[in-house]
Image (cartoon, rainbow, N blue to C red):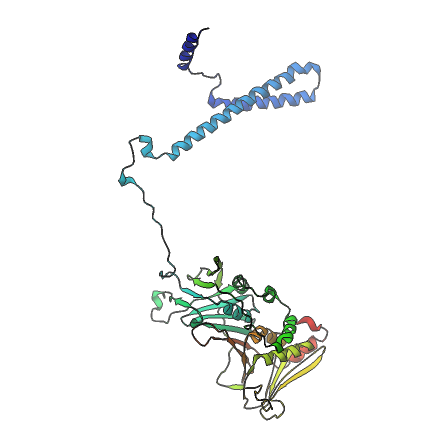
Length: 454
């Protein structure tokens, strides 16, 4: 056959398309039926193994598997081809299908991007930032005896508070002058309460998560933040109390920027930190705060008021802690010449008393201020007193007050050294006293317990 005859045959076959005996739409069904017949014949041949059944069952089963597989492969290829064709048609716009030329300028789509500017926008309620956020970290550690903290936002600053049941509460107030920038937008009041004063936002946040967030860029010992053994903390204080070391002698050397933002009810508290090119953003879930009354304290009617260095109080508690006590008794007597204030405790390992007097031969008296109209005495849970040990370590001075109901107020002065003001912050503790009989019951109940239970 010459080249011209081959070319003529090629041209003739181009006009006559090949049409299979089984259509494309029926190939899948035919293949499925043949494969099913093949499986059935194979099962029958397996039940009746003999030479006589080879041409009757085995050979037809092999042919059914062969042709069924071919039809199934062809059917799958047809389905994929149809799917690709449909996907291609979906991606084409109606203008492309009509082939009327390029899209006119009027039909060009424009993309709009919504931008949010946290500095100039008024959508946020709070936006505050500071550089030396180690101060806030250490202040929050002072009240970290609870897992959650209540946050109140006011134009004057932030207020964090924690509580343990109804017997003890602590709170710190971070004034706005401690921050390098503090912007607070009062939320809009509902129309029905336009005449009422605006309510400041209040919510709860996980204090453990907040401390871990602020501790990301801290170069201090991480075991200090996670230590739960109070006795170890007292032992560490006894080693360092003569070395003139406190929480702020060795700062965290953090030179980054920390920003707090809060957009309103239901939104998270965002903590944005950056240092040396490393940026971290943490969104802490906020919860609805359980509004409860604070422990009442009568500032106008005091039974005892004294001011001393906080290390003196921490020394006394560290010595009393060796007895494994259940409660602590504070006694004050204005007429006593030997001891104006006495701290006593007893436990399974014995009893101990620490006395403070105003008349001393030292040039720097222990009690800088002492006011006690009459003899008074009150007992408190020793565990509540030990909850304030971090505040005692961080503070320089403490004000110990008892009102006429014997409610104890411990106000610690912490010199943070940041901000535009005097660089000081206060950490307040309020502890409810034990009523008559509770101290004796706790002492009897704890006789069989170990001294390390607290």
